[in-house]
Length: 182
Image (cartoon, rainbow, N blue to C red):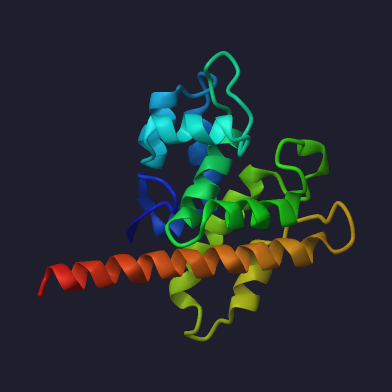
């Protein structure tokens, strides 16, 4: 079944969600992405991306090229921004990774967080139909090795918030489509 990868404009098969990391790695075979490529992938306006860099939500690109971690942080923020203010998004990301400008204190890098989330979101249609959120979270984070005790608990809490916001965004879009058909 086709779906749009959360936080992006990219279409893929939902069943291939566990291979999203490979698909993204292919985007970076020639090096980093330009601002226009990042904007195209995320659906964000270039000035929004530049503003988020200026506000230190993510590191500045090197030689005007964005790496995969920067792209994934943008996508993680993009997933949440529809129903969560930016200051709360920063608080959520900081809960997991401390100072956003300092990657040395990260419990989960932005790429891992994004790929965990994609796998979780792909399973979301089954949650409640025999699977609990806890079972789905356990399944998608099974290969996560805690760098410090308690890191898994923080990761699970952040993923639950992200899934809740993403589901709310999906329901909001569905309601808007229903209203448009009235």
